Length: 391
Ligand SMILES: *Cc1c(COP(=O)(O)O)cnc(C)c1O
Image (cartoon, rainbow, N blue to C red; front, top):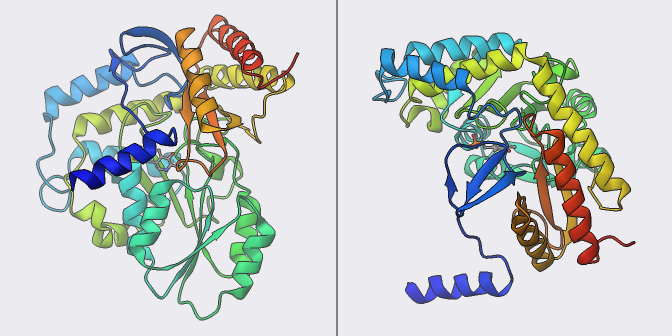
């Protein structure tokens, strides 16, 4: 056993793919202390800076005083608390769907939704860059799994045409892709889904709070609420909290409550977490300025880096990749930034495809003009030194 583990660990080490945990001291914020060093944080999904927001903390405290900490049981046994129901009601309204049900986290939502709805008689078409939790949900469902090349609608249509003799068909996509920061062609997907009678499921993890005038996500931004059967997302990113939701029809939610194993066989979320999520959604709905700052920072950094010659792929969101391809180069770039007081993680295979190692920056609403200017200056300096860009 130990030989096997060490052999595998050595392999990872040799190929620059070994990962280590880094310790964050204090709260998640635009500036954090990592391994004892104070650095600017450019790799958090806390886009709106709500993870350390005083209103969220206050909402959680009030809930703790009133409802205690743990929920004590599965929601279906005796763990269904008013904080859960309030958040579900709010999300159904916010997403303009009939109903919503909560899951403990986005990973569990995807695994539970997909594996309860699809069976071995069904077929699922999934974007090649979809999140790992979608891939795992598909594996658990035992449905036939067809990966289409990233956002390639012609390839998807060919696959749809060729798919015969399946009981149900489904297309699943992230709305914002977590490693590339680009956006799914949802309108085209909906058109194909109608033509070939498919269900559509969208993962809005990186879109909630970020996309659209009011932060409702991409489905709402494109006015596709009626056309998307299953909308899921998480409270762990822009909402600054934890947990996940699935929004859709009344029958969808009733079905999930009865059939999704990751809903049934787990303890309900602690109510204080739901109270914080609810506050986060209220802020997202009302604080337009916060989202505007996030986008101002995004446009500035993306503009500067692309004109300096960096390859930021097709990013359209606050997730900004800098493609370096080589894993060792990505790690060195990240380490040099760290020395300069900037924390940006190097993303390597298998999280991204082979030969596409990159830095993955994420902007936050709470980064100041000074923060983003310093970031851009240091990335350009190190980029020149490491010969990623020239002159
Ligand atoms: C982060 C993420 C998840 C998982 O959500 P958690 O709440 O962190 O478990 C699912 N899908 C996508 C696209 C994500 O980025």
